[in-house]
Image 1 (cartoon, helix red, strand yellow):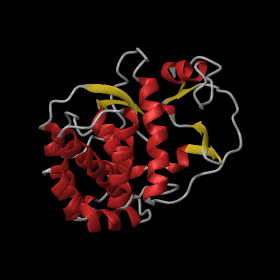
Image 2 (cartoon, rainbow, N blue to C red):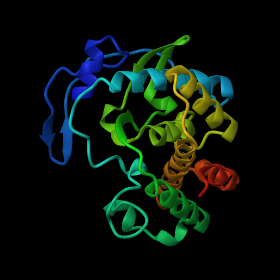
Image 3 (spheres, one colour):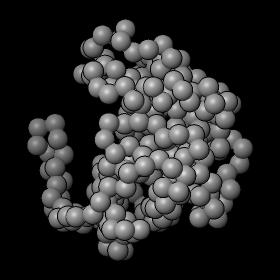
Length: 246
């Protein structure tokens, strides 16, 4: 909430927190400014990817000036660096379900992506880890509101950008953007930020897009949800793993 409050004070398009956080059972709850209206931007084309990347670059630039303790643990869909036993971060309601419904291609892709991510030694930064179409509202070409501020994470910049490059088009159940859309997102982000990623950073970006997609595909399989994300992962995994050098 502290980061959200600081950005709102600067005029960033997000709701301003109005109350401190209080615990209600297992939930952390606060009230924030009502910021209605705005439209969800649908689509996964390179043009839309570039528009979203511009917003993500602005968001990451603003967060670079925010000083606060790392918001750990990270959200599970970007928590490849967990210390739990097994491949996935421990989440009871998922782990108690029948794991045999999760396709081996999901498991194997996650294993390879995680191995590549853990092999990197890049510095961590603060970033938004749930940058999906459903969490943004637009007025024409301008972003009106960025939501879901409880999904901040502490991971390498390239990994956060990579995750966003795969998730930006999710307007409902999570899916994976086309490779062309992710590539356009990554290029536009680097161009706007004025710094080009090193080869290792690009590999980490592609690996992060895979881990997040695999995590989401597993959850959808376990919860009997839509399988579009799993289908996209199956179709794209080989090329994304090649780009990740995984």
